[in-house]
Image 1 (cartoon, helix red, strand yellow):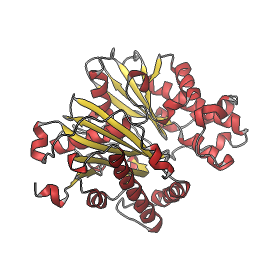
Image 2 (tube, one colour):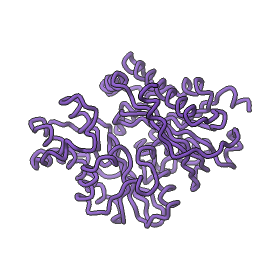
Image 3 (tube, one colour):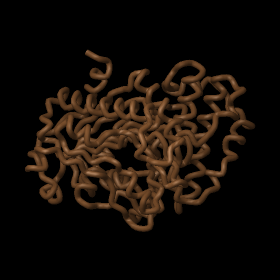
Image 4 (tube, helix red, strand yellow):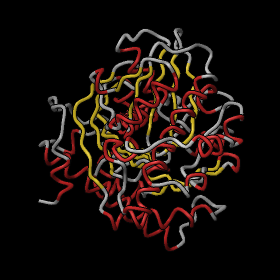
Length: 400
């Protein structure tokens, strides 16, 4: 059995199946959706199954992951500098085309294995929310590039797919990111959290969702999260990440290097704002030991989160951390110290730090099916709540 198939056996337990819905029926009933997410850390494809009305009802059913192999990750990384030189988001020069085939195939394998391992009939899945892999994001150029072939994925799975979820927001003048705040709000309100609260996603890039006492949403990218440390360790040690934050914990923060990292125009920019994973340089820590460099980059992430909280209208009662950074106690401790706010993980609330973004893209796919907005003025700076996503109907579903 491949190593990634074993990984997909993690779950929260699967509820009984519901019948296949047409899009019209989906407007009036709970929809069974698989969400997929491959983040800027490029560690794995996360898979999650939910049932939802696309609004306040969310039933989290099962989740898993299919890690990328080293060769797959290398091919995606090779596409990043190619994508950065493009002006047309639809262009697919050779390196990008190869990476897109890999991304699509890995996502298809992830779904197929997930459904098989949980004995789920594909016919009971109404829609797949497919984020794809972001390889370049430059809102100042109104350009965002996610690779992943939605029609090919739908054809292989035999399930309707909603993909290309960022483009409509950017065409309407938004930042195209973050996309998950609507899901964050649904979780926070359903859990009865004492608002205001901040949900902090620490993936390759850090972003926050502020949920106000009246449900107000404000969201933006705070700065780097895991990307800089991941790249440092890959270059120096051949490791894809700092497992458990152990390397950073063994180092010391270099105050001069930290000040240089924080001297970046992004932090003085007003909202709305969002980032590419490669927006920051590791040059200020280049002369440091690996341990000190990692410790300084962790402090950098924590300080940027603290700076982000100064942009929201009220201090949150707590920070709930999700994404890969939630498994890094060194980073969690640094965020709590820098912000002075009680910090917990999504897992501690009975949610899933690892699966939250995948769940969110299943949720957003359902909102797209129902004609509900995905983005809002407070989350991406778009002028008005904006729809998004492209629906690919499979022949079987289109005839239903």
